[in-house]
Amino acid sequence: MASTTTILLKEDIESLGGRGEIVTVRAGYARNYLLPRGYAILATKGNVKQVEQERGALLKKAAEERSTAEAQLSVMQSLRFSFERKAGESGTLFGSVTSMDIEDALKQKGYEVDRRKIVLKSPIKELGDYVVPVKLHRDVTLELPISVTAEGEVIQERLDEPEEESAEETKEKAPAQDESAASQSETEEE
Image (tube, rainbow, N blue to C red):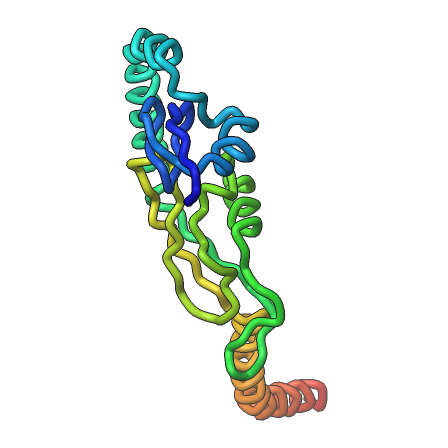
């Protein structure tokens, strides 16, 4: 059987729990990942007592972080992003839209969001409209609408329309030019 260890979380960890919680995990996970990175400490009597004393400060800090995230959510609600990528005829992209692309787009708009907070299970590899969750806080999530279009698609549509119009316009202008040329030649003869 695998041995377990009781630890005290110092950070919010998605799959385990929130800061200040005491959880039981496998010993290897605690020893090799959580403890060295500072995400948790061993849940000894002394550590638990120390955290209990700091609980008030932790709760206050957590409340501030949540209110900041909610304020950021209200500001970011109106964001929409559109990405242009090369695509095949079937709508499959030659490449993808990743959380790094979304992070860069957010940075260009002036928002600093860690790409690990962008919950994109797999890169977007097809044309279409998507909603990507962005975790601003453990309890606050932004639903970010994203549109992926084919590169050159909009430009091609715009180019097709003026060409058709310009062909019609030249037909309309040609007789008018002939008439104006004829009227000029009549005035020159007089």
